[in-house]
Length: 197
Image 1: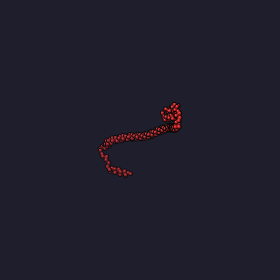
Image 2 (image 1 turned 120 degrees about the horizontal axis):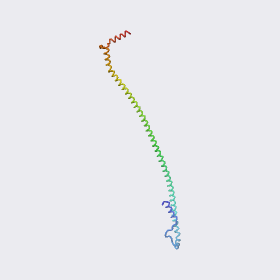
Image 3 (image 1 turned 120 degrees about the vertical axis):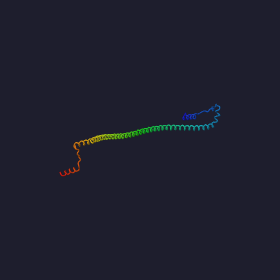
Image 4 (image 1 turned 90 degrees about the horizontal axis):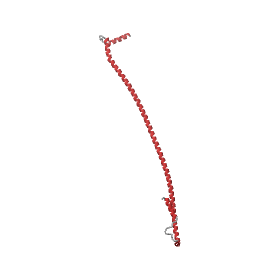
C-alpha cells in the first residue's frame, strides 16, 4: 500500500460516521441521553473541530505528495534528458577519439613514407657509387694488365737487346777494333762543321 491509498483510507474513516460499540441503547434510555445534550454538543463540536483539522492536514499531505510526485516525474524526465546528453557527448568523444587516432595513423603513415623515400634515395646513391667503383675497378684492372704487358715486353726486349747488340758488334768489328770514340774526334767533327759552315 502506497502513501496515497493510506491517506484515502484514513480520510474515509474520518469522514464516515461510525457508531462506537456499546453505544446502542434501547429506546427507554434515549430520554436520559437527551438530557445530556448540552454536554454532548460541546464534546461533538470539539471532536468535529479536531476532525476538520485532521482532514485539512490529510488534504495538505495529499497535496504535498502530489507535488512531490510531480517533482519526481520532472526529475526523472530531467534525468532522462541528462542521460541522453551524456550519451551524445560520449558518442561525440568517441568520434573525436577515432578521428584523432585516424589522424595520428595518417601522420605515422606519412612519416614512414618519407623514411622509405629517403631510404630509396640512399639505396640508389649507394647503387650508383657501387657501379662507379666497379667501373673504376675494371678500368684499373685493364690499366694494370696493360702496364704488366708493357713491362713484360720491355723485360723481354731488354733481355734480347744485349744479345743482338753483341752479335751485331761481332759482325761489324771482326777484328774487335774498339768503337770507342775519343773526345778529339768530336772536336774535329765540330771543327770541320764549323769550317764547312
